[in-house]
Amino acid sequence: MKRLSYFLFSFFGLALLSSHDMYLKLNNFFLEPSARATVELFNGTFEKSENVIDRERMVDVSIVQNGSRVRPSEESWYEKDSVTYLDFDTGAPGTYVIGLSTKARTIEMASDAFNDYLKHDGIQDMLAQRESQGTMNEGAVERYSKHVKTIVQVGDKTTDDWKTVLNYPIEFVPLQNPYELQGDQRMSVQLLSNQTPLANQLVYLGYKSQSTTHTHNGSTHSHESEESHEHNDLIQLRTDEKGTLELPIDKDGIWYLRTIHLVELENSAYTHESNWATLTFAVGDDNSHEHTEEDHTEGFPFYYFILGSLVLIAVFFLFFRKKINES
Image 1 (cartoon, rainbow, N blue to C red):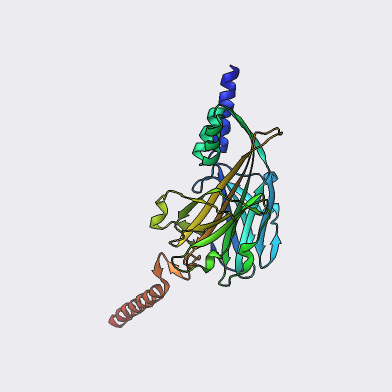
Image 2 (cartoon, helix red, strand yellow):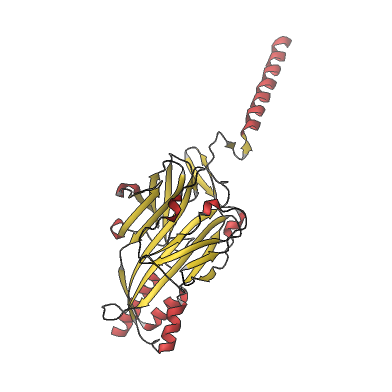
């Protein structure tokens, strides 16, 4: 019975931990200055959030704009279904950074559950280390925390805020502004662990085409482009001795990085400690700004609507004038 209880604990613990990457996302990464915007916090995969994140779990939430780093109020957050949302007001044009860092939590897993977690989440180095050390039959007590960032463009003017280091236990720091990339370019990113370059770390790069939004009757709706339902396998990359990566950015859309830095601990109540990091940003022209009904009516050019209305009015005018003359 005790063995069964331990198995169940490990199984459900694995279900809670595995695949629970954390991402900051937006329906539109191109925002208007001096406007209300919403950031989505996904805890699960890039495509689906499995659960919300309590405010008490957030160690830091930062919005960096035009050289200023501010923390939004707790009232700015709300939940819907399994997604956590943050509303904030943009200010002057610029390239903004939004970051979030969580408190550490602990999970205990039996050996099989721990090995499955390593395989499922692509922590290949630790899996290889356990195989070489002959420790595949050992369980684990892991301490883990997550640290996520997103970069968005407000208005047309770019600023240097994109390279701000938030001093999280682990974080991706771009070496170029993604919103200044043109055409088929490669982008450099550095991975830091406790403000030190993290060498030889396995990193995964993913892509999703940008969704478009429009405003209708006061509500904002998202429409994914035709490519958005396609799922491309994540690209595996490794940091060099300086902790840097060259990202093969070859098309417009949303790009995201994920990594889990897992190490063994000695003389500790925990056997392992992991720090999870993600970074999201968009590449391409500002072709997905919100459009109001003054711009489009059911996808029909607005001036066509005006012209058609004038023609219709003229037809009715001539029709009723003829009727009056005939009478």
